Amino acid sequence: MKDLSIVIPCYNEEESIQILFEKIKENVQKLKLSYEVIFVDDGSTDQSQIRQIELYQKYPDNIKLIQFRKNSGKAAALAAGFREAEGKLIITMDADLQDDPAEIKNLIAKINEGYDLVSGWKKKRHDPISKTLPSKIFNFVVSKLSGIKIHDFNCGLKIYRREVVETLVVYGEMHRYLPVLAHWQGFKISEIPVQHHPRQYGKSKYGFARFVKGFLDLLTVLFLNRYAKRPLHFFGTIGIILGILGLFINVYIVSLWFRFGNIQNRHPLLSLGILLMIISIQFISTGLLGEMFVKMYLTDESKFPLKKTFGTNKIIK
Image (cartoon, helix red, strand yellow):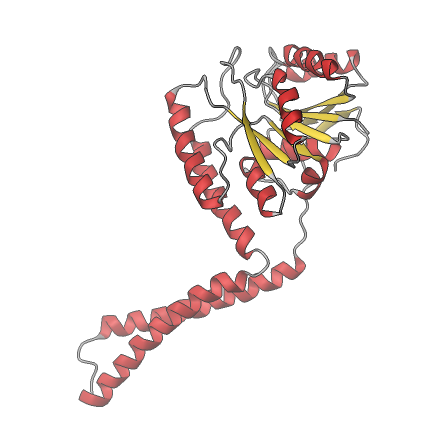
């Protein structure tokens, strides 16, 4: 088993890959740790895969390559890298040279204080305001809703103990919420400020749409954490509330009929009462169906469209 695994999702970063590896090698060798670097190529369309193969041929003992046939997203890349990682500690970082490998020693020092996951905090960012402002809003909202007091959920530079990555299920866009998921499973979380460099090559692969997806995924995370194993509690509560409102309305309509022989032109109110009762039944039924699916639920996290692998010990189907 290696001391350290470094998982690097990569998408169209041909100019950065070799520079990044040399910097990683230089910093890790100073620490005298055994290590592996796992490049997970997320369907790059430039020369990134060729640059990775060149590095693998030169350093086969320290490099693993996983290459997706098409772009599948950062969460899928991290999940594949986590499955292949052999290190006692696992570090993730981006391939664009904005994350500094010199921070590896600081991350290791912090996690050795007794934490299970340490996240980087890009306290001084070298990005345009079109990225930094939405990011601050996003991080503030996530921190408040999740109850985790860290400043930068989007930072790709993180370190995990092995048991953390073996526990987490990463899919969709959930890579932003790994500290949240780990915290809710009882792991100790911390963060440290890290150096953030301006992008040297290429352009950012993320647009404003990632924040919209991020907030939708936050709702998913909150829902799954609280109600994944008891969906009837969520849907049933809403259904009961709506059913009680509908029942009160219908009782009122019936009382009008008995008092006046008609409903005093309350037809819209009658329609609302009936509608609420129907929706109530639908919500409760949805909750019951959810309970059935929970019993049959099986997460299959392994079906990524791989092109090929190099130097891996496991086959990802």
